[in-house]
Image 1 (cartoon, rainbow, N blue to C red):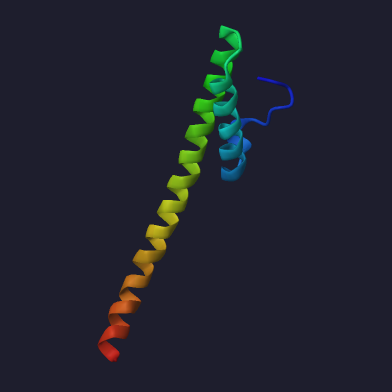
Image 2 (cartoon, rainbow, N blue to C red):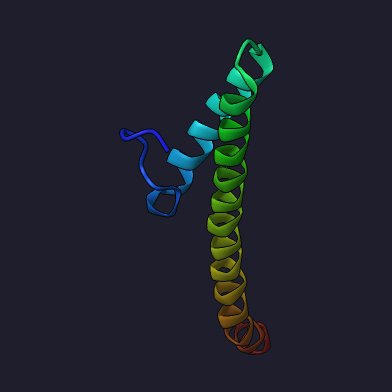
Length: 80
């Protein structure tokens, strides 16, 4: 890992996503030796998993909020 790189587990969603976009761009350009390409690929895999982690957490929060709203909506509908 490069000394200036933030550990993946410390990145927020937007940071991980933006860095992943950069990783893909660099890999698509080519020109790296095999070791550098593999290291970048591995970083990209970790970044993708970090993004999934954040998105899964957001999805769970939304589902929980929707479930908490359901009883209120049913009660409100019966009162109208």
